Length: 114
Length: 113
Image (cartoon, rainbow over all chains, first blue to last red):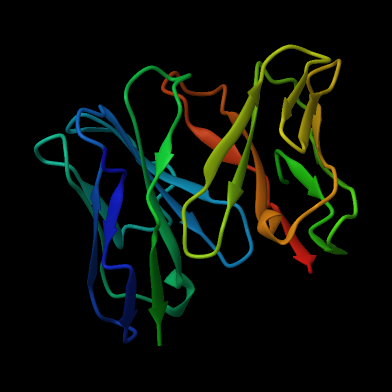
């Protein structure tokens, strides 16, 4: 079956532009996570959805970051007025349900802000 | 302060050598996971260790969870170029009920032919 997919795979933005990153989770997966990963570092948690409800957004770096999952499937991470420090790989992961089940990660979107 | 400290940060070895990667913390965890991430891909779960002192083997990879459940190690025997990648340890953050993962900073392994 299909895994988690993300688009675009690469995004180059000029500082100040808005970007939208898409995540298509595995069908039927209730839980969805967004992580930010700096080059050569481990992923850092951004936000968590259970179906369409955003239950934790404590990892979002600033109010320029916004995530949604309106129908409980596809999710979009939006970054407004991008800054150079936003340059990173943004990973999406989905999980069938239950906190001890495996999270399946997508390939990520590499965002470069010039 | 990092919840999980991984060492070494970088490891460059020749094919056939053995290596060990460490993941340490001052906190006790109910379980710990190891992931491998290749360039341009997301992390892939290798193993979950649950019991203190537990040893799990996955082909040439041996994973150990410390007796006190504060640390873990990953040992690779006879490394191959295909083992090249970023190795990450992670734990479920106990402050939430939904299974939020906290990762170490990773070990970048390069195996030269």
